[in-house]
Image 1 (cartoon, rainbow, N blue to C red):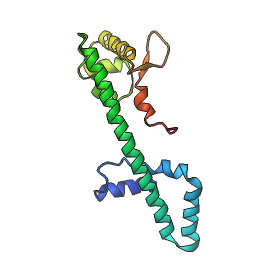
Image 2: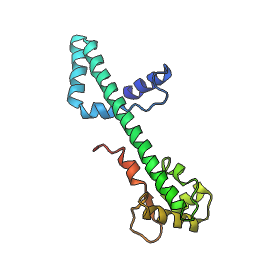
Image 3: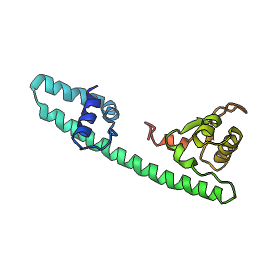
Image 4: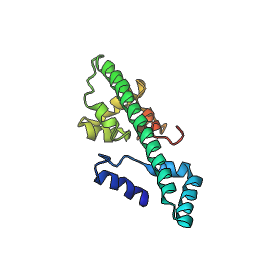
Length: 160
């Protein structure tokens, strides 16, 4: 809870514009040092040790976040380029790329609703996006298939 409050505190003072600083990952990866820093504060009242550890976490988390955002921008450019090339084949797919980032896992019904196109068109579109390497079908079924924007979700994998 405290980790979230720290992030929200930074947002409230304008140090962050959005709560995108995920400190829990840093603390989890450095669990031993985290507990050591807390113990030092508890046993010797040395808050400076904790603050230094915490600020290292903020710096590392911010650097990782910046790198992830840069990777998202590069992926978006590559994906849009693929979709533009695909559109040049005569198949208009306007509006597709905007939805991939807000809902990177979807089925044809969801795609139909988001894009305002018939289900059959959405199903064809999903298959086309799979063919050009943007979507990956993950069920193996012929019906009720679920598509994944895997390259995007991989950017958030903990095993980077």
